[in-house]
Amino acid sequence: MREGALARRLLIGLALTFLTLFLALPLAIVFVEALTRGWQAYRAALADPDSIAAIRLTLIVAAIAAPINIVAGIAGAWAIAKYEFRGKSLLTSLIDLPFSVSPVIAGLVYVLLFGAQGYFGPFLKSQGLQIIFALPGIVLATLFVTFPFIARELIPHMQSLGNADEEAALTLGASPWRTFLMVTLPNIKWSLLYGVLLCNARAMGEFGAVAVVSGKIRGLTTTMPLQIEILYNEYMGVAAFAVASLLALLALVTLAAKTFLEWRYADEIAAMRRH
Amino acid sequence: MSVALQIEKAARQFGGFAALKGVSLAIEPGELLALLGPSGSGKTTLLRLIAGLDHVDGGRILFDGIDGEALSLRDRRIGMVFQNYALFRHLTVAGNVAFGLKARPRAERPSGAEIERRVRELLDLVQLQGLERRYPSQLSGGQRQRAALARALAIEPRVLLLDEPFGALDAKVRKDLRAWLRELHKRTGHTTVFVTHDQDEALELADRVAILNQGQLEQVGTPDAVYDHPATPFVCGFLGETNRLPVEVRGGQAWIEDRPVYAASQTNLSGRADLYVRPQHLKLDRPDAALLGGVVELVRRHGAIRRAEIAVRGLAKRLDVDIGGGVAPARGERVGLRITKAHLFAAT
Image 1 (cartoon, rainbow over the protein chains, first blue to last red):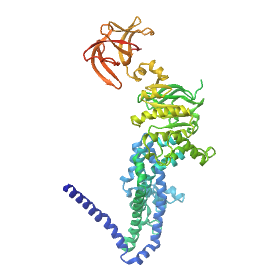
Image 2 (cartoon, helix red, strand yellow):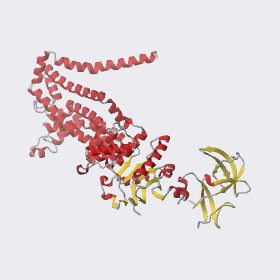
Image 3 (tube, rainbow over the protein chains, first blue to last red):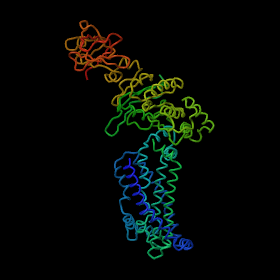
Image 4 (cartoon, rainbow over the protein chains, first blue to last red):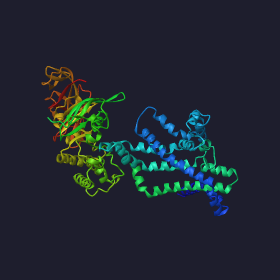
């Protein structure tokens, strides 16, 4: 099979070249650029109060978005996978909507709804609530773009599982809540975890939607991606790349966690999927 | 007569489709009852209604005299073995069996040691000793079924429900498990209802068989009663093989064209009717001695017996006839036929 071997090498080579050029190289450059002025400059850039605030805000937003998405994602996936009802296909497409809508539009919609000139603006102002140019707006925009990740992971898995396990638990006398905790959750835990990891990575990295609603108030409403852009536009290359390297690191950690879990629990995951 | 489970005119609709059209059935304590019917007959629907996994649209189901709708699933205490067993794959065999005990409210929950003892007892009962630490994916089909059975028995069920208990097993294992289940039932005496589409299984295993067709109960009775005295043409055709002969009934005789073929003495039918005859109730005879005669078209082996297909004048379909140990007729030979036993129903 000489031709087979040749084709195989060619394809592997092609894929590797592509990955190196478009993924590994840019990622490496982020770290190289961040460290061009040395370790001291890197540390100083990250110690900047605005950058620290941006890092904190990003973590807060992700920490709020993830649990909400877990609950909403499970609820949505449950409804679609386990029940038959009118408008089910519409709900399925709605879950995908954030994937097809530009994040900028998502941000603009929230400004239109909750901004000072928006539909609910005057009411919110009279109540002393600020959504746009504040944390709630950033969380809302982040939720919009990250919602599909968990539901998308869960729906096919839950559909393949069916209802029999839950029914068995109910006939054995388990309450619905216990059934969920002891049967459903263990059954879907791996897909749920993948969904959460993906959702989290996107929540921390989202730029477009957040940029529109945040107002980019330094030290207050700038998340890490926004802070990077601000720094870069102000020709503070080292600082921009320092923050960027941190964001990239978060992505790499997410990837490493996913790979580690897959390796550590390979047998268990295979057993779950085999059914 | 005491009754463990009383089903009164249970009805269930799915959209416009009536899956169950008012079925009434009383199940006695300790009996092993088969719900038999083709797919779509409503047998699984009825099983799910008993289990409380679905609700009746009409009628009611009484457990020891209490309406099921008033009972929570926990209080119904129905031990259900699902078709694909639905074992919890993240729990070991022991964990699966203990599930129902651990799910009880704290006040009624047995102690850890007690649960452990009960699990061991049940695994002994279903002969899964030594496998308590295995996961369901590490068990064979037969072992999974027994694990599912032990899990259902753990809650000390009022009624044990089995949904196609042998459906997912291969033929050899199925046969062994049938005998084993019969034995287990004899020992434990649980009121048991199982669903099957396999008439051999139902007749061999059950104390009584309830035959369902298109959402209606056709007949309930002991295996002998339903087999030997089918109440409807459907039951006759569904339980074992049968030949259907369109006949004309007059003067206490069933006629095919101008030949009287069967003495229909205990019937008040007259006019067009169908005579159902099982292959073993047709006896070969000399062509000139019998009123029903035909030509042998084919002789083939049918398990332990041989079966001839005989074309009879006046009948569109060939008759299946079992041949005993005697000499098999040759193809093309003219033979006579005698009907030793038959069931007569009004023409459908």
